[in-house]
Image (cartoon, rainbow, N blue to C red; front, side, top):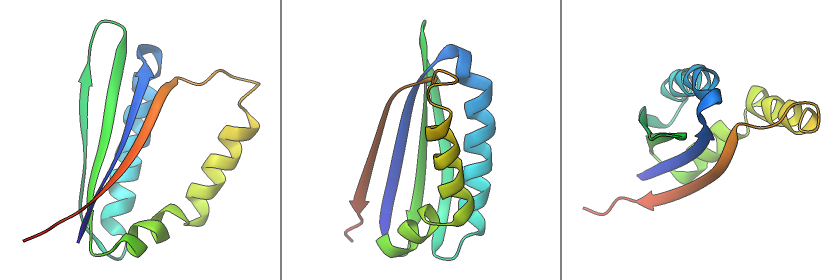
Length: 102
């Protein structure tokens, strides 16, 4: 089993958009084969918000398959295409993968 985290540090103006995005992502993960659990953690300070998606998967391949689903790839293509048209709310993104040991 692996635990996967993806953390987005964002500008406060993007809070509502990211709430919708992470809610959709958590629901999508929970329906995907190989996902054991998924939730989103949230914190904020004066100027920024942080969303951390935390999910448990039967294998790393299961998580990679979720990342490769067509709708996710399309979201990234559109975000990249619109990068110059509208500024991103994301200040920083990091992803970590942990193996669970008994």
